[in-house]
Length: 280
Image (cartoon, rainbow, N blue to C red):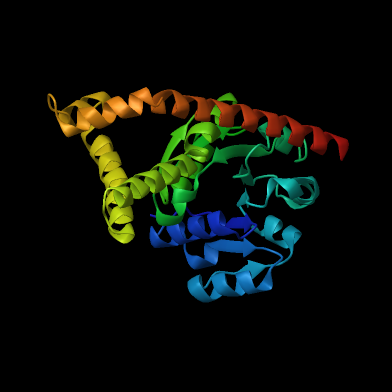
């Protein structure tokens, strides 16, 4: 069953491309119902060739065409994008933001009164249909708007619906989290090389171990501590390794990393709001 809405992506970068792929692959939209807008003609040609979707280099045209407007440009250009969107958006359109740090209030203030806005925080594994996206409703957004946005992002992973004040925490955890996991995989692969494995084998084993462990947790619903205990045996190898990780402060370091990233997300959001306010 299709969504039955025309969706325009303002900005056709990697995340927008992943969402377009997911929507079309899931049959949630027909190609004629999805438009990509970008200033880069080669990128638009690529998407049109791959998917048969309409494209535009005109932000106002794409905005006026859409039932759902997805703000997918970099936050740094929102001071120029938002006024143009506000001037062209239809009064019955839904505006969805995937830009980190741009508050719902900042978007609503630059849209016509009563515009329905939903803010999201996806992450890069959406590029391989394994994303984790948080969704927060704006002042005028209805339950059906949130349900529509949820369906869009469910096409490239999993979603949770939260209050907006929690999106900085989401940024610190799942938004920035892939970077932490890549570092862990790299470190595990280095460890494999140190104990004698070939680099390719070590990296494959490390990555598959992370993937398989996450899948086991999600599919069984077991507490991670219980699954950890299933791997450890008295006087065995796993408990010896875990002792080293705890002694090295891995748990505390990860908690601190998420907290630091969440704080930085809040700081950047404040700076961006101040910049947008100055440009009014």
